[in-house]
Image 1 (spheres, rainbow over the protein chains, first blue to last red):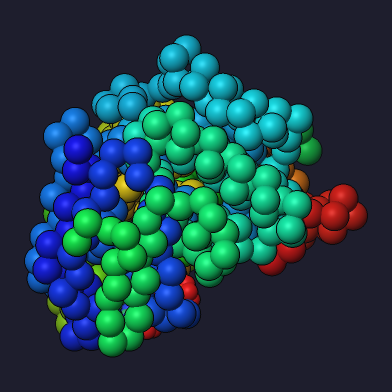
Image 2 (cartoon, protein in one colour):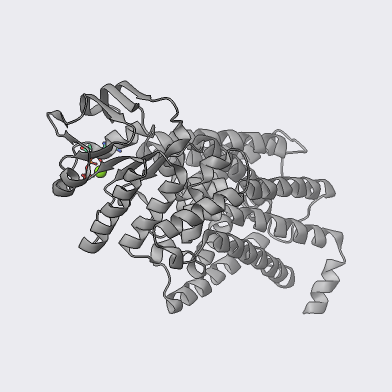
Length: 218
Length: 281
Ligand SMILES: Nc1ncnc2c1ncn2[C@@H]1O[C@H](COP(=O)(O)OP(=O)(O)OP(=O)(O)O)[C@@H](O)[C@H]1O
Ligand SMILES: [Mg+2]
């Protein structure tokens, strides 16, 4: 079943078109890698899909059963503030915020979800630590745990392995692969072509002049 | 010294000043962390100037309850500034500067042109820097202050988790389905209310200090959002109490004394943080 249908989409900023006429479909259970050079517009595409910025033209349709508050997002590392005073627990729990609706405080259910995802990422011992004092790899795990709190269905990740050492990188790929096997649809931006071809079911290559959907039902 | 203070506390106007000072210090510290981390400090600065302009209009119009003009004008400006700030960053900055300097000039101008007061520069000075001696407040003003403070604190507690989510990572929150625009709006309105409140205590030019210093101090010594928030509230109230006491004993202007204490506490926290190896700015 089509989870996301992108049709004739043009993206960019105010007067500047970054990419135009993109069309592709993401099905439930897919593992889509988006590749392309720096500045090609990968992050912009992801932010547009997430509704963080308006499309210039075209449309993005979400399949039935996927509401906006069921999307987990792992932003590109640069977008997180480095010196923010927050504990790992506070950050992961904030992934459950959308579940609360108008409710002011987190309930038992949300705390359980946060706890489960913290142990899933193997960061239980970091729970009370300050986020900004963690290593890059540990921070990525925290943000992934937070993203998992926000969704069971769809994860969008912007360069999840950037800045990780080889061990942490393959561990991260293993975790993502496992999530995918458990039914989470993955859309991931990556510069690692080799890993992208190895793990993902579809690859979307975007560039300045062209858009190629490799194996994507366009 | 303590005797003198206790003697002063017998007077209702001193008690009022202490109550109002503590409440304002508490409220202004709550959103400080958010303001600093969201890079919203410039909005706080701009708003305080707008509040000054509105205050000038209200005095010239001879209103007994200046809040009737100052509060709505500041809240509306907060909403407008937030809008402009979100569209594009650079334009947002410029518009804040425009509005704030414009409001300052306009306020001073109409005070000069229309004021019937015999002590014009004194009036301007106390609007900018707070009253020169201990505050003299009517019971009515104290009541308004208590009501507004309680509203601010209750809103903050109820929306604490949402404010955290929006402050830490707005993109993520929005992607996950949190109505971030709503909470940004809420934050802006609450900031406006706090600024109007704090104007009584420290005057419009020093408000930013009252909002930002306790948060910066707490960020030196604490590591989680909750502990930073609590610590900054405690520090802010303590600084206000010390500042008020010093200003009573020494006859110094209350607003700048409180801010001076805030600065001193920041220096202490900064050194403590350095010793413990904190997050560097
Ligand atoms: N806020 C912005 N306003 C205007 N243009 C922008 C903005 N952000 C990015 N761009 C431009 O849009 C283009 C695409 O940027 P984007 O961040 O999507 O690239 P990317 O493919 O994610 O690159 P990278 O691999 O470096 O992360 C770039 O040319 C960039 O200069
Ligand atoms: Mg990018």
